[in-house]
Amino acid sequence: MINHYHFDKLIIGGSLESLLYSYVNSQKILLLNPIYPFELSKIDYCSSLRMVGYDNNRKIYKSELWDRLTFILSMTGMVIFPNTIKNHREEENSFVLITDNNKRIKLTSDNILNFDSVSDDNVLVYDWFNVRSGNNHDYVLLTDNDQFINKIHFYRPSRIGSNASMKDLVGQSNLHRSFLGGPNYTEGIARLKIIKMMKEAGIKGQSNGYSKKGKRQHYAIKLEHTHREIHNEYTPKFSLDELLLLEPQRGEQWNLTRKLFRHKQISTLRESFRLPANL
Image (cartoon, rainbow, N blue to C red; front, side, top):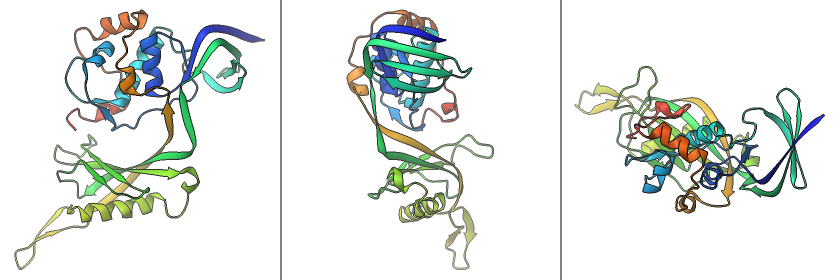
């Protein structure tokens, strides 16, 4: 037996932009392929962000906003079947979903909006490193013109043994999917490229005293790869800047936001809590 649900309008998405569009227009959204933002990516505060509960002038992590919108929309029933979809197939004006308990659900709509155009070819690759030597400097970002490791993001960690003066890093690459797994694009090659860029920027390893001539000496830069993230590149129907100019419909999600965030900032963050607000 297949359960059938019909909606006048239905958003198919997974990006931060699709969630904000759902929130602003008070429309149901189906998160078939969640597109979680890069953890260090931020947006500048603007007064429009008050509609989702922000009232302090600081840069906001996109991952934080993604979590908050997902939480609010799920609590008000705007996210359809959250966390239960195992598989799906698309038909004309409809979707057939297979849930975790192998139930089949058919969704139809008179107006389906496929919000995110996801690239089949291009991906964003993020290589995360703990910096064991060479983590005390003033840099926040290093850039390069190459596709492989074209940005190095430095951030203050909260792992055991770290302190306020230390920085770990993430190397960012914009690659064709076919390059993944190639010998020239491995985590080890990323490590070597990052060390080279750090040296060229004048970053040195941990201090190792002074030479007989009184010159300060340093250990080599030491990086420890922790994990690699691969994000699909996508193009949303509307940008964040465009969506933040819209006046939100004051439905259930609007009322819930006012109740939750009226008196103080409450974060629904899953992982980005470990990143300080003053990065």
